[in-house]
Image (tube, rainbow, N blue to C red):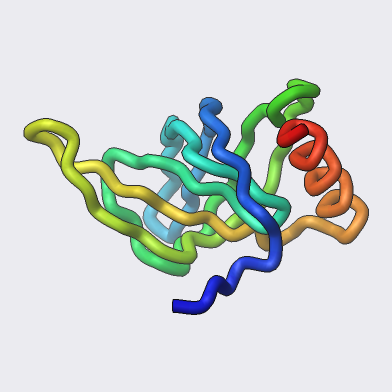
Length: 114
């Protein structure tokens, strides 16, 4: 299978706040990240959410500790089991980052890899 990612991912474990808003209301979720790139973030959620779901996410960048906020879209979901419970590895693609923010994020991640 060919890798489709534009940016290299870095394994990162940090708390992520996810706010989902729909026509029926909003829902705030806490998640833990698995990895991060300038194009998106992988998180573990306790519930499955539909691909294409839009959400606002906030987290701290590794190394600098800067707070990052972005709008995102769920790009993929993989279910896995943790003991008797199910969890969902969820890929969120950033949708509203301008080029300068993408460059900044990519630089931060490059420094964190070093």
